[in-house]
Length: 338
Image (cartoon, rainbow, N blue to C red; front, side):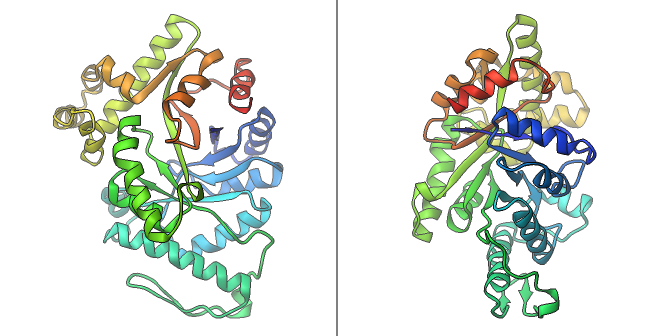
C-alpha cells in the first residue's frame, strides 16, 4: 500500500520547496485538489522541481473545462514530469457546476464517460499523427491541424482516475478509467459491499482485471501521541464526518451501517448553522467506522489491515495537518515504505 500526500500549500512561490521535501521524505504521489485554487498550476511547478514522486489531481472538476483544454494541460504535465502525471477527474455536484462554475448540468455519468473517451482520442491523434474524428452526444472534435498539434511525447499513456461514491460512477470508473478516487467519507464495509462490486462490474465490461486498476483514497485518521492531541483530532474528524453526512449524496455510506436516518437531522442542523450540534450527533461508533485512531509510531499497521485488498493508495485526510517540520513525519512515512 502506497502512502501519498496532499498539496498543503498552493503558494506557487513555495510549492517547489514543498514538493522536494515530500519527495525526499518518501511519499509516493503528491495530489493537488480543486478547492480554492487551480489544481494544475501547482503540479507544473512540482514537475520541474522533482524527479521521482508521482503528481496528480484529486480532483479537477471535469465539466468546467473543455476536454481539449484538459488534454493540452495533461499532455504538457505528462511531458514535464517525464511520465509521472495522473489526471484525476470528478463531476462535482449540481450546485457547484451551475452556481460556482456556471456550466450546464446534464447526465453527469454519460458525460464524464464521454470526456474520458474524448481525451484518449485526442491524445492518440497527437501521438500517432493521425486524424481527429470524435463524435459523441456532448462533445465533437474533428479539427486538429499541425499548427495546433503539440506532437508526440515520450510517455503518452496518461492514467485517468475518476472520482465516485455511488455505484454508477464506480462502475463507470471500472469500465473506462485506470483508477478510482474513493471519497474520504468511506468505510471498509461500504468499500467491500458497494464500491468494489460496482468497479468489478465495470472492469468485466471492459475486459480487464483487478490488477489493471488502482483504488486510492484520503482516509480519516486521528493521529496523536498524547491525549490532548487525540482529543483534538477526534473532535475535528467528527465535525468533518457530520459535514459530509449532512448531504443526501453521501446517505448510502451511512445506510451501509444502518444510519441513514441521520442525514435529515444533520441537514436540518446545517441549515440552522448549528455546526457544534451536528458534530454531537456523530457517535463514537460512527467515528470508529469511518476513521482510524493511532499514534505516529504505529499508524501504518491499522490502515494496512483495515484496507487490505480495498485500497492501493492512501493519504491522510484531516481538517488540520502538522507542518512537515514535525520530526515524527519521516519515521511515519518509513512505516509504509518498509
